[in-house]
Image (cartoon, rainbow, N blue to C red):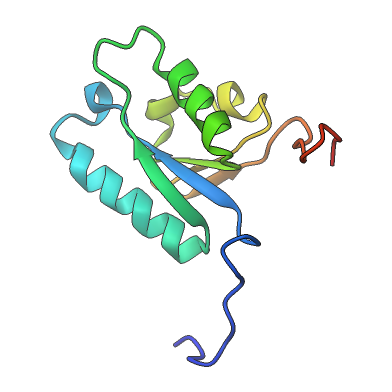
Length: 122
């Protein structure tokens, strides 16, 4: 049971996360996958922005999600499973994002240092 008087970090101090659901992979389970991603983000303490669903006719959905993650300033991309990223977490991590999957719960760290404002590497 969490301590009710514990102070939560401000939204600016928590890592920013987005979800990623590909409907061609999740199929009829896409709404449930999106809800489980949101729950995972809340329970992990992330500042959750949005669940991205690339258009069905998008030729490269991973490029789509990476471009929007950059535009939104996300640090973490949460997918339901590795199938959402074509079983290749490096496609996300090599660009400096942390990738997390809900099922099974796994975390892949960024393989390059994150950039901070001003272009300096951390």
